[in-house]
Image (cartoon, rainbow over all chains, first blue to last red; front, top):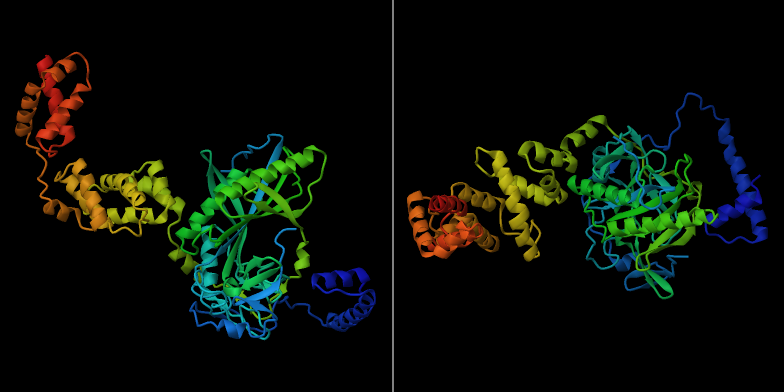
Length: 96
Length: 495
């Protein structure tokens, strides 16, 4: 069972504001998910080296050749807000 | 090799500095998509696609050239290149990376365990390199009153991070390290090194500890240093600040601080998040890299000569002074130009030619470049023209004085000095001793007072007489020959 502090910390890192009752709700849900995933622990992986990737692919790289980009109006079409061909967002504070 | 550390700030405390340097790479396209990196003068969001904008469902693909450049850098910094490497996601919640994470490298970077030597006060200091890894740059934020505009052109530009060990012991060493690193990046051709444009950036970790204490003090991370000078100034300020805090019985808080250039201070930006708050995990969209040993060796064999090697070679191969070798090496194009002068010269005594090339390049050519605000790549004066000028001097076809005028002309017209000499009808210097002796006798006869002055010990009277002889020969006599013949004549008169 995930404790309330862990739930709050995860929410904070994900920039999510949770009410006290939501901490309870999502805590239970996260715990259920982790319990479910826990079934993987039963697999015998002795003699299998850890891997970072599920595919067996390696060295998928491309040549350094530029291709045309998209038009700004296409890229910004779904932006919640825009100005001067830029995405417009809430003020970002550089310094505290 | 390693010498005693040096701290000018306070002898009771030792300053410990490590640097994290970020450099954009000079690839033509971005790190994980094919958008062009040539956006310096472009309108906002014109070099962007769904990949660098972080739209859902897109697939990044690694730019092989960026990997190569990183390996080149790692080799130049004496790092090991492990056979296996991978990319990771680093959780990141600012609007300048729309994905909500940065693709970086966490536990298995492309390279690690290298070093860089710096020269400080005549001694060599070895600064350890922890790792060199590859990641992507963020978008540019344009801050306005009450809102921020995001230009995504820069997002996804290949960004190489070079992390040093905490081996520097003074702000000056940090600056020297930074300068040396930049020099290397430019030499091997992977980066522009332009700090003022932000293509080369530097964050510092700095702590202080009572001298003699083994354990490191609590460090702060300093950001926003945009020049070599601000690196040194910011770290001097921060070291002094930390020492003051400790002196007054306070504690250093682990935090990120920003350097405020116009105020000359650092201020708290944010209290440091712990590393695991970044929630790194392997990037599922990018299969790992197996770096083939033969590829690494191929890259190593193609690696351009490094500045330290060049410095030593100039002294060994051409017998140049350390001072001249340093100046020629500092700015790579100047050194390249010097080598071209030597290369196009058909001479037996290559050392003498190299010495003359270095002298003329570093004095006269550099003077002309400065006066005309040109870089050595921009001048019409070719290395062949300089070699031609040196040939004319070697053959005593022109005097040193005439050579300067001819060089001025060659610099502005781009013509070969021999063509200029012909065009201007410059006659060969009078080297015939009999002719010169006759002129000297005339001059001596007409200037009895100067001769008397000389006899009375006023040796500078000779200069006046030389001037007269040069005037008579219309500058076509070699000053050193005139001088020796004149002295001989005067000494005869005296005796």
